[in-house]
Length: 188
Image 1 (cartoon, rainbow, N blue to C red):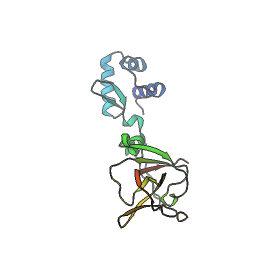
Image 2 (tube, rainbow, N blue to C red):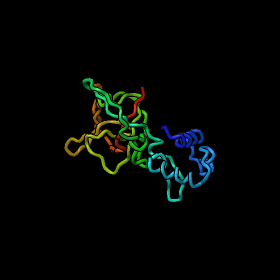
Image 3 (cartoon, one colour):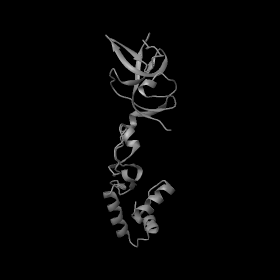
Image 4 (tube, one colour):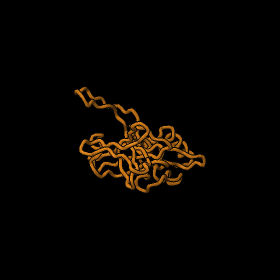
């Protein structure tokens, strides 16, 4: 971020947790006219740093709230690494594209460790109209909630853990699928 004007607007946003108005941009950047600010804003909108709604209100753009995606890293045999800005990722947008139907749960227990879901992880889940066997779901079964693979045997659905130390759950009563797991977040 070499542009000093961009740096000052980003600094204002980080300090105040809101976008500056035209007068505040003039004060922060030293620009002398609203026309100069208007041109700066349009340039920053084109670059993805800012967005502007129909009423002209500013919001942070993908380039401001996202994290740089710099390239690929080999998880097999080592290869030459080249750093190249591929895109800017907004993790919020990436993990929860349908925000109104998504929520996050903290994992307790070890029944899904062979699926790479460990105690303390956060799972992003999404409510949907339909669910398919093979998906990892949040289900209400026999009065309790659990996270397991949804499986089907004949016409009956059951819940299958991803840990050999746990047994599948064959519901005695109703089985209600609440959501499907769409992502896992783990911090080290």
